Each structure stands twice: as C-alpha cells, then as structure tokens.
Image 1 (tube, rainbow, N blue to C red):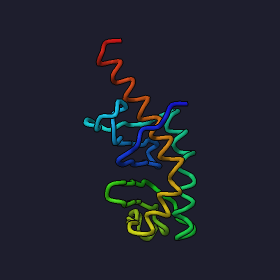
Image 2 (tube, one colour):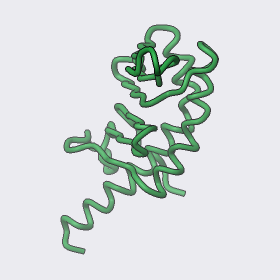
Image 3 (spheres, rainbow, N blue to C red):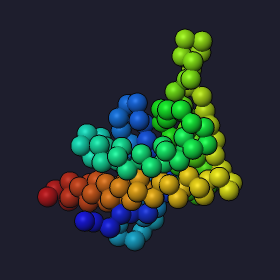
Image 4 (cartoon, helix red, strand yellow):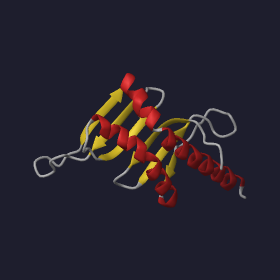
Length: 136
C-alpha cells in the first residue's frame, strides 16, 4: 500500500459522491502547486467508508445529524460542514456548521482514516498526472 501524501485541505461531497484533496507536497517532496485531486467512483467508495468515523464524531456533538458535505482546512484548523435539514418541509436549506479551536482537534483525530485514504488517492492521481505529462 502506498504512503499517503500529507494534505493541506480536503472536501467530501457526500450527497454528490465525490471528494477533493489538496496535498501539501507533490510526492517528490516539493510544495504542491496545481489543481487539487478529485476522487470519484470506486476510489470514492473507499473514501466514503473512511469518512464514517468522522461523521460519527460529528453526530456525537448533535445526534441525528446527516452530513451533506464537509471540508477540513489543516492550516486554518477548521472544519466546515453542511448538514441536511432536520425539518426539510419547513426549511429545505442545509445548515452550515463551523468547528475550530479545541473542538477541531477532536474531529481531526476522528478524520485520520479519511485523511490517509485521500492522501493515498492523491498520490496515485499525481503519479498518473506525471505519467500522462511524460507521454507514458
């Protein structure tokens, strides 16, 4: 199994079924510059499973919530999440939640598996990009 790349940020679009990651480095040890990595299909399935511990951690703050999408910014030490509406007939809009400060450390600890899985997928995607750029 490949070593995951460290990530600067990530976003999981649970409802739409894809994720994005912005690596901290490019796999050769240089700072990452370029578009982030989008993960879809079978690879997203592995990411979705890896995200379940984080979803459960968020539900421990407020039982019954359903996460629509979330983002983690490791530089800003912040999680933003859009939750499905609790009473969709009354108000169909999602609710935005921000977690930072000490609470961020709790959710970041629960995101370890997700971060590692997206880091592995990011490494694979960047390797494919290099191969394609080299004409291999």
